Image 1: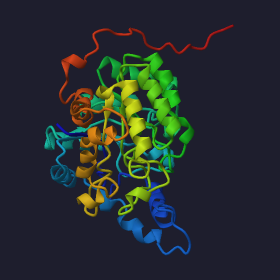
Image 2: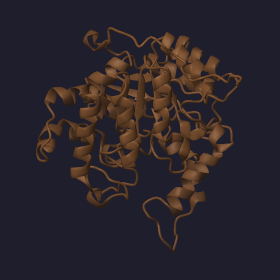
Image 3: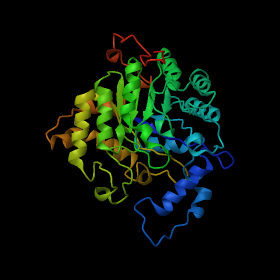
Image 4: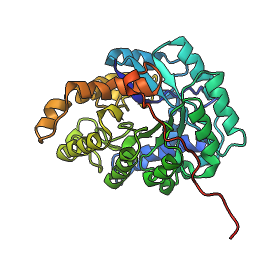
Length: 373
């Protein structure tokens, strides 16, 4: 079973867009003046891209995503609800409830192929109720939280979400990638803050998406969280350490300013082997093959940062031979865990009784409340 544990399906339409307008404009400005190390003279016009920016990668009925999964040999994808409105100070055309409903419909339309999370911005007044409805009515699985929206993972504001997740066996996903503008407040995302909440809720299943990419010291902070708690998982990709942000088509070895498997393979092999030593192969997942299939983003040469979704899965299949070049050991059985078994267990696709932890820490909310002297 091959499960991509980090997929996006943008479900906007011309009259109801998934992204706030400011976010779409930011993407256009990035394309014109920043991405790929753009230098003067500037010849791209962001306003020319804006009318088609979101629609080129929008897939409201899921057909492009499923077709790309079939082409790449992906059995199931984990899809995240993202609530961008607060961080941009601008409203999306689709409400969070709309997004939850659409993802629930896509799960029913493609049974077994998509597992979608909830994802309300926790500062919404009705965020907890939105989360509960996402799980109970729309049959979503878990919640994706993005601290770079402007909150710390240990903020007691979030504790009701953790308690509901713990009481209902729902995993909590955290984005831990370094913000490059799509979220503005990078300092909140530093993974060291997640260790605080895993101490307060040690029995909660937590997944650290991106494993701190692309700061090595953030990667190490993620490893610390996983090494100190058997319920913390690591997920690479979307972007991550195999394919870093900024990697360029037809220039993989020189692509991007961040370390990746093509411009610094020895480092990446060392990092993944350290992750295996810290957490075990049974707590590592891959992903990031599809950042958004759509009318203009629907072939292998455009997916996974133009590396190819199938190629990314095959990169992981080649881990035993590749790691051996540097004196590390990865078995095929361990790679199979990374490629699908771990995500299947966490997301409830196929629970493995042998992975169930027979004992509980048994506490929650150690964070001290205010008290008088």
